[in-house]
Length: 462
Image (tube, rainbow, N blue to C red; front, side, top):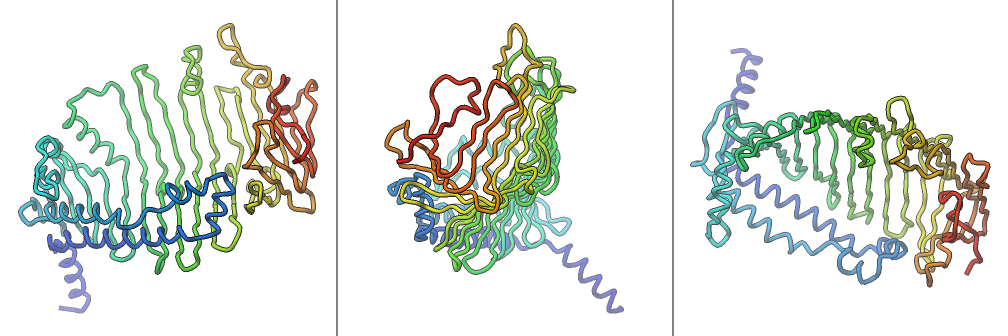
């Protein structure tokens, strides 16, 4: 036998050889418990970061809340649940539960008695009957991949990827999951569905170890998610979420005492009826097309430094809401300044200060006048108006202080420290508003012609 043939044979044998059930049970319980516990301990360490305390206090989070609900609980609160999980895993991945060994994988039947027997040996009979009725199975393969299957057809609900001392990921293939959930619903409830719903795409939730005391918890859209539903009214609605990795994540770096929160939704589209948004039967036959270009931001807390906001924006193009050929609403953020903004977040005696780079610019158009009728009134400021708001300081850093400790509701909510705030609308009856440093700002609660432009007034600083 040649060397190439020998290697090929070894590869075939390695894939054909199913894993040992004891190894599957041990790795599922021990590897998950070890990684989750280590990540929890790392997160628990953030309770002692002084700069995180000061930043939350600046936002109005009380010292009492920070010391209780705003802290990561002790890891001991997690241990009981993980120990209980290990006992159930040992019962499920038993030799006696194996129903198939083909294709280099093991398929285990999930029995109600194994899932619904508590740590003291007491069986919940109703729980066990429900589990058995659903016909659940787990397929174990590779190093180590677990797929939860349901029904006689063994459709996959989701898969669990376990990599020792590296990562745990839950992956959902929506096309497979929809078939599985349909089977599960029929088995559990025996109900007739009066609508159709289909979805495709792939999403993931992952806990990854980047290094010692350094973990990232994230969710991602691995491939575009598209859903389609035809309701009892016979109308088909569709929604699409663009691929984005990650959509949201939090990374905690113990050695650097740094926490990084990331949010970054991809493009979102929705097509249906206008009444879906406005909840009015007057628009039962009017179509609606919503396009949201995205939303993104990164927030960084680092011990000994001011909190930082980076890459905050509303996507790379204009977001719109349309009905046929009518554009009802559109919005742009910093369209002339890279479409994002960065800021530092500095606690002050009265609240907190934000310093922006390069500045803020918001342009929005509201054109709901085409919807006005005898039964649906549209306020003047929503009929056909283009709004602009900006906070800029050419050659300098726009800066504003927000007061979180205000004595009365009428007291100023902020102070412009550097730069100029402008509010305007393309209506000759409404004068533009300009506020320059060192103005203090308060909410105006009197009669206004346009609430958006005239809702802010300059007042004496405290």
